[in-house]
Image 1 (tube, helix red, strand yellow):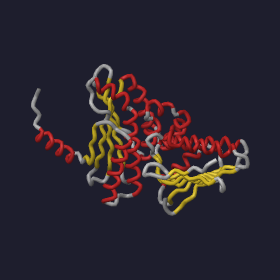
Image 2 (cartoon, helix red, strand yellow):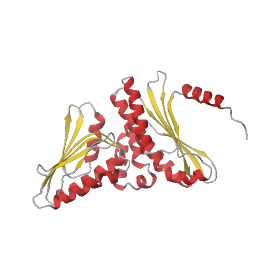
Image 3 (cartoon, chains in turn purple, yellow):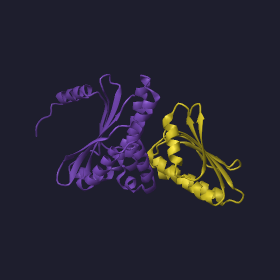
Image 4 (cartoon, chains in turn orange, cyan):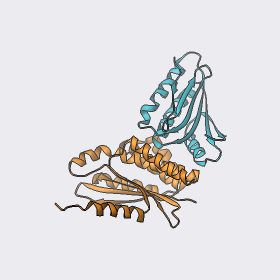
Length: 191
Length: 128
């Protein structure tokens, strides 16, 4: 096994985080405790530079829904972990834009390839809709609500798109025959 | 029958009822670990309340700053219970209070009531 140079690794992490303006990076199991801790951390941080209340609320909302979506996939991922995959998801929050005035939340987690077409179709549908369309889809999802129960991503994703007014940037990276790595990026822009 | 009295936390609202006045009140933010489990006692309380003789009216006051999408489903369940009782002739009033400067809170309230047939008011307040 190759010997790891930890001092290099830590320094590299440090530099990468600063270069990408990431303020928080977490990889692992997402629990309610984690959700509470991260949202409190972000709130305190935003309070420290008197962030606008409506932006603060949007960031908070996106964080809660993204963390919840990650945690709802945790069961699948525990099984996967025994097969060699580590962690149940990665969660990143950072600043973006020239003046560092905007935020983005990035998540990544392993999904079964069989679930990808449905998820992709759902994300594309959300991205194709305007404000009124999203409102209608939200109502429909609220009444039916099955996807949300099973996939844990229904209402949350629609609501993120509605509240931020931004398209959801997503991607699926091949891991092996059965699994893919699903990444999602949400922007919260100051307007 | 007992009143419901749940103290609030950072992520769950305070919930208090007053059988004498015919009122139940929600105050705070809501993103519980398990929203269904958290709101079950509320559904049970409302069912029981209307089963009691003489309880013909209920006012539901929401003072909610923030709630997540799992909670919105629970609020919808609660509103459906209220709607059913309204159909049975009970008098239901729902007041959604929102901070004047918080568009999101007003929007969330409106969204909740779109599909439900109960009397509701959107009431601006200074601060939640």
